[in-house]
Every structure is written in structure tokens, then in C-alpha cells.
Length: 118
Image (cartoon, rainbow, N blue to C red; front, side, top):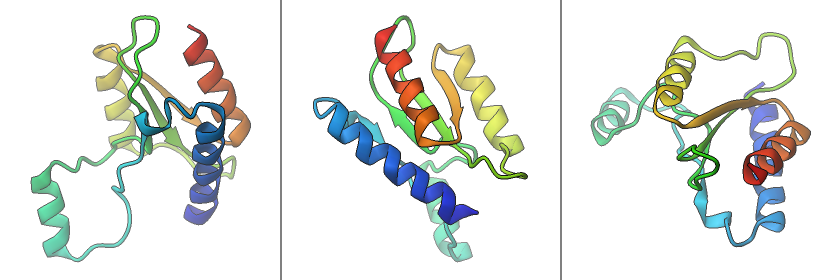
């Protein structure tokens, strides 16, 4: 399931780059996931890696929001937010960050167009 989510995200980032080349540098993915040995995982944690951090962040303010945070999921059964992701969503919302879950390229496109039009 992870590769399906990755492929959706790759398509989203590619589309964004073509549609909004001036903003492309402001759309970022932090590689939180993946397999790491215990030593490397501890190092990443000390560097500031946080469980639940969204897959993408668009560092562009719009209509009172500081940035847009996007968690990618698939439309498959069982593809849901973890408790850490839900906690991050709640915390981000308290401080005027827009947080959304996108499950497809269409979801992502609609989200971006709506956010940038605010």
C-alpha cells in the first residue's frame, strides 16, 4: 500500500510543479518514513523528526492560514491516519495551519486550487 501512496504523491508533486512553477520550491516532503536502524532513527529524532508530520507542506500563506499541510492516503480500505497524524492535525489546526488528507491526484488538485483561491 505504501508504494501506491508514494505513486499518488509523485503524481501530485509533478502536477504541482507544472501548474505552479513559481511555488514549486515551496512544496516540500520530509522523508519521515522508511526503514532505519535504531541508531539512525535516534539520530533523526534528535534532529527534529516527528511522528505524524504530514507528507507534504506548502509554505505559502492563504486566507489566514500560515501554510497547507497535506497527509497522503490511498482510497484502499485500511488507509487511515495514525494517532500521531491525528494529533499533529489537531495541533496544526490550533495555530492556523490548514491540514487536509488527500487520497488521489484529483483530491490534491481540488485542495490546491481551493487553498490558493482563498
